[in-house]
Image (cartoon, helix red, strand yellow):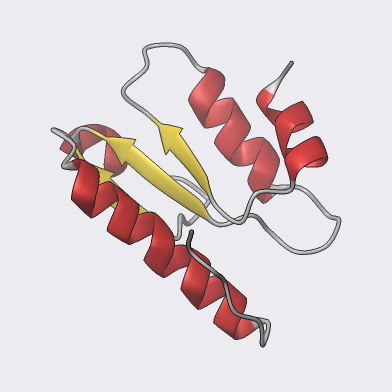
Length: 96
């Protein structure tokens, strides 16, 4: 199943895109998600090396996490982005 297919089925609050992968797929996914027209945009947290995170792009991520990845920082970033997005819609999230 493609990443786009997963989004259509699961409707995640945030997507984490790992730009450290050598393939073009992460960037294609990033641009595809940003170009979706239905129901707003999916917040993206990009993970990668400094130079990869600084490449020019028409897509503005919700946040960036540099490598090496601190798992606690990544989780805190995803939770903050999810809460910010939910708050902007007048909703709240529950962490289990």
